[in-house]
Image (cartoon, rainbow, N blue to C red; front, side, top):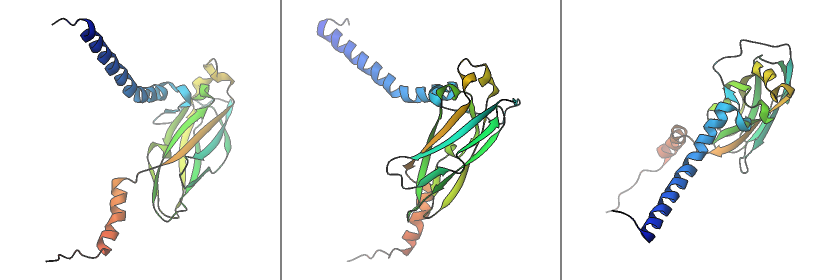
Length: 198
């Protein structure tokens, strides 16, 4: 059946809407993957182990922390900065505290500035890889292990980077189901039994 006139226009419009909707839906995960692989937008890379090469050249790493609006924790770096050799493995700590009377789960987003360093700042392990749950009044120190890839000195823009800032923002998320179940269990045990009225 051949479409003509208004039918053809309607079919093309529906096709364009479906295509644009599909591209919009896929754009966020694809962009995230692109940034992770390339370091674009200051997204650090990940590695299983440290660098095999350590240069004599040093770089200063600054640490920044912030909270999403409404997140009741306090959150800060333990040390504001460190200097290490390019390729050397660094270990830094961030401190989080839950001042409330209930458990709160959080997840951290992160980036690196300047963006030219994003593809060369590599994390080996980080608290940001998993969600964090703090009990009422709990204070924790959370580690991040990282290195700056020696390839940065060969990059057209990266070779001029002498200071890198690693920034985290914590935002509140729903409690994991297993934690919520543990919190609900004592309440269920203490709750009065239901009575059936005839």
